[in-house]
Image 1 (tube, rainbow, N blue to C red):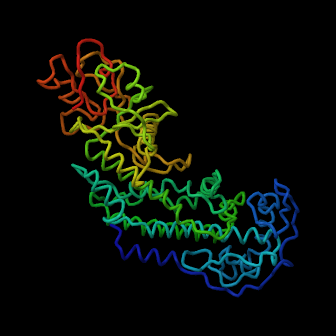
Image 2 (cartoon, helix red, strand yellow):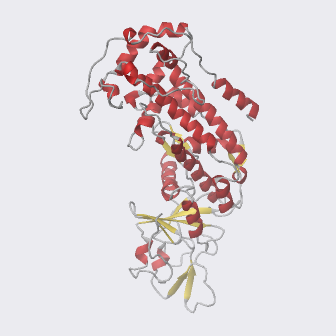
Length: 488
C-alpha cells in the first residue's frame, strides 16, 4: 500500500524549487553566431520578432543546431552552478528568478520584451515556458477535477448502479485517466490538428517512463461503487508523476531538445485547464464501461444495419418491433446508436433482464457529457478487435508504441449472427470476440443465448411468437412465416 504520507513526501521531494544561482548574464554577445535568417511559409521573416512567434520557425532558424552549440559552450558553467538546463539558459539570457522546472503558482513567467533577445533565444525561452504551461495545465486540471461522490463519477455510479461490483486494480483507473495524454494539445497548437505532443513523448522515453510507469498501483484494489478514495489517490499520484516528468524535461538538455522538437511548445500565455476535460472524459468512459460490465450489460452489434431503415422498408416480421422514426443529436434511436460511417448499429442489452430498453440511461450518459457514443460503443469494438488480434489484455492503457489509447471502453461486444435459423434457441451471437465471462460456474458466457431467448411472448398472442431482447437486431426481426416477434 502507498500511504498518504509517502505520497505527500514524494510530491514535496519532486517539487523542490530551483532558486536563482547567480549565473552571469551572457546576453546576445555570448550566444553562438549560428543565426540563419529564414522565412515562414506565409512569407513572414522568422528573424523579425515584431511578429508572433510560430512553430514553423523552429527549424527555419536551425534552432536545434544553434541550441546544441550553446550547450556545448555553456554546459560546464551550468553544471558548476548545479543548474538545470532551463534555469541556466534563462539566467544566461538575462531572465532571472524563474523556476520553470517545477510546478507551482507564478513560478514561471511568460517572457516579455521579446526584442531584447536574439531570435533563437526568444524561441527557446518561449518553448521553456510553453512546456511548463502544458504540464502545469494538466496538473491543475486533474487537481481541480471533482472525482468525489458528488461529482460526475458519483453520478455515474448512482445512475448505472452496478448490481455485482467487484474489485478492480486501482492502476486500471490510472491508466484510463492518462491514456489520452497525447491528445492534450501543446499550447501553440490549440485548434490545429497536430501530433506534436505524441511526437514529443515518443522521442523522450525517459519522460514516458516518469509519466506512465508500468504496473502503477496494480497492487491496490477498489470496488467501482466505492472508487472515490482511490481516485483521489490517483489524482495525487499522477500530479507527482507530472512534476517529475517536467523536472526531467527542463533539467536535461538532450530531453528538452527532443521534447521541444518542431517548436510545438512555442506558446502564447493562455489557460489549458479546459483541455483536461479530455483526460476526465477518458476516466469517466472507463467508469461507465466498468459499471455496465458489472451490471451484466453487454454491447450488441449488428453489421450493415440501420435501425431506421427497418421502420420504412417493410422488412420487419412485426412492424411495431422496431420503433425508430429518427436519430437524435447523439445518433440514438430507441435503444440503439447508429454509426453511419461504418453502417454499424450498437445497443445495450442486459443478460439479466433482456427486455430492458436503455434509451433513458443512454440519454443520461450523453447529455451529462460522461462520455460520447463513439468512445463508449466504437471504442469497445476497437478494444475487442485489439484483444482478438494481439491476444493482449482488455485493460485500459496508452499504447506506448503507437501512442494510441486502448480499451478505455471494454464492455463485452456480442455480434448478432445473421445466419441463425428460425427459432434456433441456441443461436444468437457469433462469438467472434469471445463469449464473455460466465455468470457463475457452469453457466453460459455473456454472449450465449439466455433461457428466455425466443420463448413464447404470452397468452395474448394468437399466433406462434418468439421473444427477443429489447436491443435485438438479428434475423428473427425479418423471419418469414406465421410468427410474431416481441421484445417485452
